[in-house]
Image 1: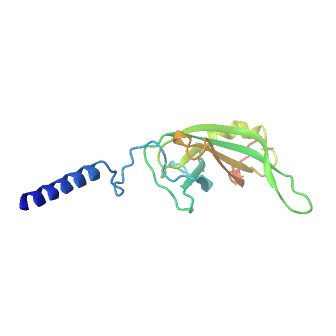
Image 2: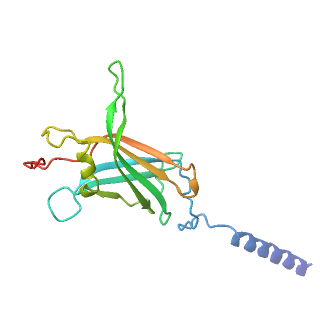
Image 3: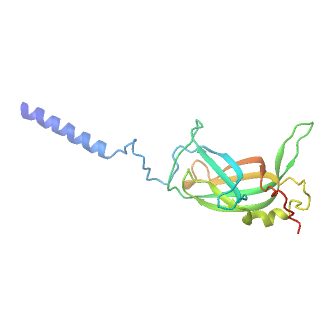
Length: 185
């Protein structure tokens, strides 16, 4: 009888070991799939003009985006390559009855970026979009407003949860005139 109990325990131990070996460890931080697990929507954390080199002037736009799950918790991921398109638009107000409703008007800049890590920011130097901005903004007017709508289009890996996630932010400043500079020369 003792040998049959030992055999039974050995069989249970072997089955347990095999079943655990076939399961993924839920505490393993390295996710080997291409999918961003739990992704439901994206959000623009910030979009601002910043300086990132040694000279004192602003260098361009820095965009930070968050990937969120259904509860609004921020997701963290690495090595999940996918396309992100950044678009700069002029904006117009189509609201009625004293209620403002801003919408996209004219697209003047678009850039496709290969994005891989949730903790990366997207930097877009002035040189990349300033020429196009001069075609839509009046740089000769010293009081000109150089703001518009930023649209971020995310194409998640494996098209999950959808082929494309879009988020927009209005009244984003694309350019600030340096104090004392005349850009019309």
